Image 1 (tube, rainbow, N blue to C red):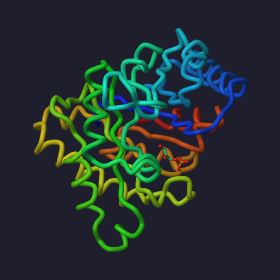
Image 2 (image 1 turned 60 degrees about the horizontal axis):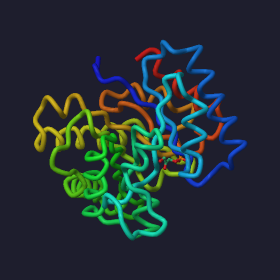
Image 3 (image 1 turned 90 degrees about the horizontal axis):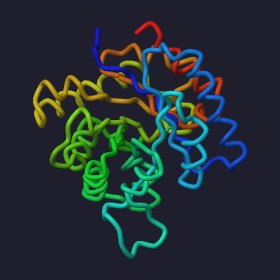
Length: 255
Ligand code: 13P
């Protein structure tokens, strides 16, 4: 059995206005308060406008809050961007970097993701570094190569199991209802673990959490979370309903 504590992370993406966001965060916090013994860490990544109210809504209930992106620079003339230290200052302890939606919508490269992860580390945030292949890449037999290359290019110097979480999110599984099979997920997670070992040594690689993301739902979470190299979930759609999100957290119970 793995000694890695699972991480159940909700990525709200560009959803929720203030009133509904607070209700959702309070509902998650209330469930956590009651089932505080569940063997997982719980994280909510709201849109940046809701970081402060969500931090207030979950305060004292062992629910962490994270950003969905940060800028690579510490501060300066970057209109519309958010520095990692600002997220930290607002009460975040994590930040997602390199999500495929940012790689696509904002043409983010591995080098940019690496710089953002370095900025997150410098600010004292845990970077959740996302990687994953497209359907075309999978169909072309490039899944392993693509994930290896993205991982190699996105990990900054100083990466360790305390400051970094990897999220494997096959792009074809995001928001599509089409989830990776347990075999597909475990295969890539094992490759990621091996790559981490080559880069960071066995100790750090064995301690680092690797999340699966892509249509994780209450009805498929248990089997995915039971896989040897799956250490949690990065959940989009199902994180917008407290009951669904919490059902996924509960799926950690027997692990
Ligand atoms: P869905 O759970 O909606 O497929 O989204 C996954 C994701 O992109 C989380 O970051």
